[in-house]
Length: 113
Length: 114
Figure: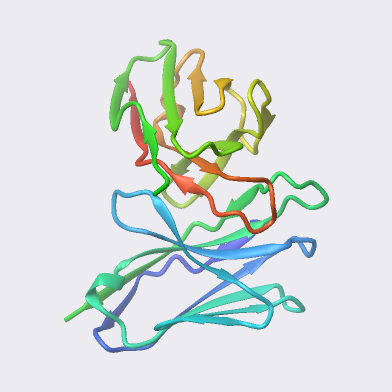
């Protein structure tokens, strides 16, 4: 079983739609969680961290469910510029503190006019 | 702004060649990382370094070595390139070793081994 699993998609949605991505992780000792965004042929960039209480940044909402080892990302009012690959990322360093991240394979989102 | 640069965007090498990939960050970050990214597999950690002259194996270190002689520079070395090492290589850095530290990535090097 992969440490971090995502549905690779692709998700094709019209502008203005709401879309949600899910991610599961296998290591219950994981301490921190992130969503990164990667545009085509570009490097990944941090989109947002994910906190236990859930957090929102504009049109983006991230949720964490530790009991189910599940992370989600919700995008409201999708824009064409949201088209990208969304990477679920988990810190699975366990008892060490070296900040080792494990990446999911990514979910492809295409927003069309 | 944090800037992470990689020496080449595209590289073509032959099987058996020794390959050097260079990465430089300009923000005095403690930690540096090398990943490879392949379709369907995502990013996988090859090696990382949390201090000058220190290195730790990641998930797939076989066939690779690294060097960190200066804080700002982290080099990935393919001792004898093979076709299975054709991939996108991404370097990243982070300020500290905390749980929530953001990693900043370079633009990547697309390596083709013939």
